[in-house]
Image (cartoon, rainbow, N blue to C red; front, side, top):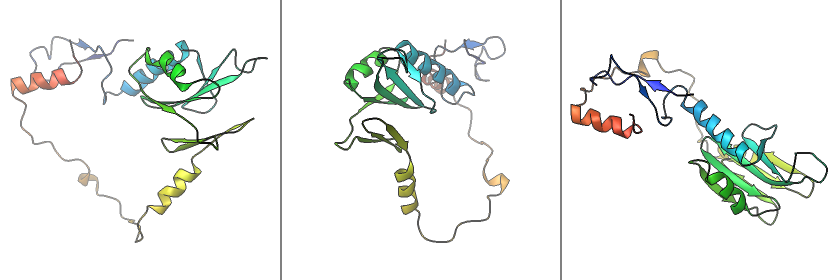
Length: 186
């Protein structure tokens, strides 16, 4: 569904027009939801199926679980980043099917000789009859990087988080440039 925004207050069309966005803009309330819908549609059109694990998709040769159907790929997602792991096919083939569907950052992953891959803090381990997914090694590595010392127990004051914006308004040419950088608003 289309997304509309009101022009900035210094724009002549502020009170009289709404702009229809031609693409999602980071920072808008629904931009993540809009992009997830686009990404999910693109993956489904390319033949991927959601697994029971959030952010993880399967690619099968046929209907998942059907006799004769086999798993050929995994796709892990994190916002607009996708990691493709080919199981019995080249990841390049799987990437090509998705890349033509949208602006994604796709990483081709290759398991080690032990069948392990780490991407975005998630460890994937491929074995003959199972796939293990874990974050335990990543979480342990985070604990090792915490410096010694007292843990702060005093929360920040409420007024220390938000500061009133005292910057001057943009000049008309600067406002025009800012609007063009936001994503080609029409």
